[in-house]
Image (cartoon, rainbow, N blue to C red):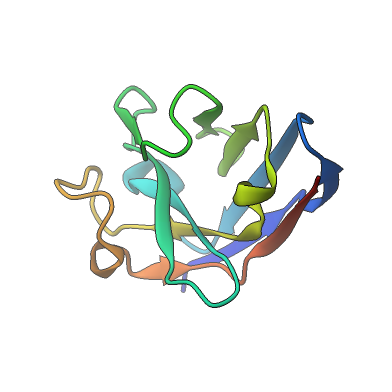
Length: 126
């Protein structure tokens, strides 16, 4: 059983930076493509960023491109999301997701991920 646990969320101000982490256990982390999604109150869950198993292939939503950076440390079984220039529009609960495949053709589709964490709350005040 693969378990994902997010951490690092919190309350920050507009323009601040924050790094959230996703630690995994119970599986072979290096074999999984992974992504970050987020969900704001009253809105659907949306794709944020994707990273393939080798950490080389990444993709981002237009909303965060140029501000957020996804990375992974396969030796530590952990994925990260560095978030810079945060704005109130980034306020959401952030979820990490793992695919059973090393790479995903459509990273923004939640159906491609078999494992999800419980999320960590990020709140950006104006």
